[in-house]
Length: 258
Ligand SMILES: O=C(O)CCC(=O)C(=O)O
Image (tube, rainbow, N blue to C red; front, side, top):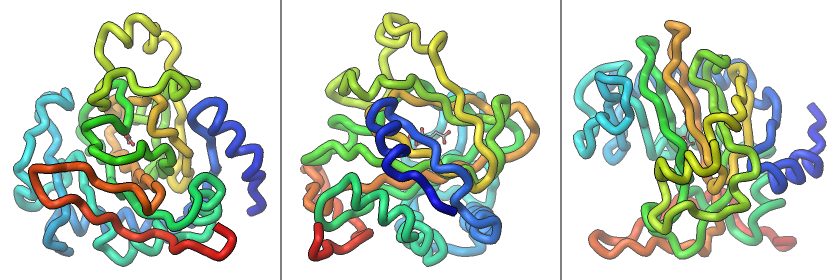
C-alpha cells in the first residue's frame, strides 16, 4: 500500500492526530491479540512486565494501583513493557513506523513505551481526557509521537479513541500532565467538540502526546484492545530520582542521514 506520508504528517502537525489506515496485516493482528491473551492468562510470562487490573466499577480512577499481575484474567486494563515480547518487538520496529519516526525524530530513536489498553468484553472502563506527558512522565524532553493501533474493531459504541482536534497546540494543561482538570474540560467544551475515531482491527492512528484524548467503555459486548507505541529521541533522559533512572529500549539506530 502506498501512503501519502507527507499529507499524513501535515495532518498530524495541524490536528494532533492522523489516520494511517489499515497497516497491520491480519495475521499480525491475530498473533498479537493471541499473545495479549497469553500474557493476561499467564501462559507467557516476562519478569518486569507491567499489568493493571481494570476497575470493577467502570471508573478508571477505581482501578487498583501497584498490584501487578493478579492471576489469570482477561480483565486487565493495561499491559506495559510489551517490548519484552518478540512478537510485539517485531511490530514496534516495522519499516513503516521507522519511516514515520525518522521523519519526526532526528538521530537514534528510543521507545518510551509500548502499552496495551484493554477494554474487556464486559465493558472495561472510561479513560478521561488526558495528555501523555508532563512531570508524570519525568523526561528531559516531551515526546510527541505515538502510534495507536486497534487490535480489535473499535466502533463508535465500542470504546474507540476520541480526540479534541488541535488541542496539542495549547501545550500541557497542567505541569503534571495526565488527566485534564474538569475546569479546563469545561472551559474548552471538550465533550461537545470530541471527535470520535472509530477504527477497524489493524488500523493505526498517529496521536500527538499533547492532543487531549479519551475513550469510553465498550458497549458492544466484545473486547477492545488498543496498542499504543510512543517513540522519542534516544537522547531523552529519565529524570526520576527516587529509583534508578529508566533505560529506554532502542527502537531505531541513527543512520548516516539522521
Ligand atoms: O486505547 C485507549 O482507549 C486510550 C489510549 C490512551 O489513552 C493513550 O494512548 O494514552
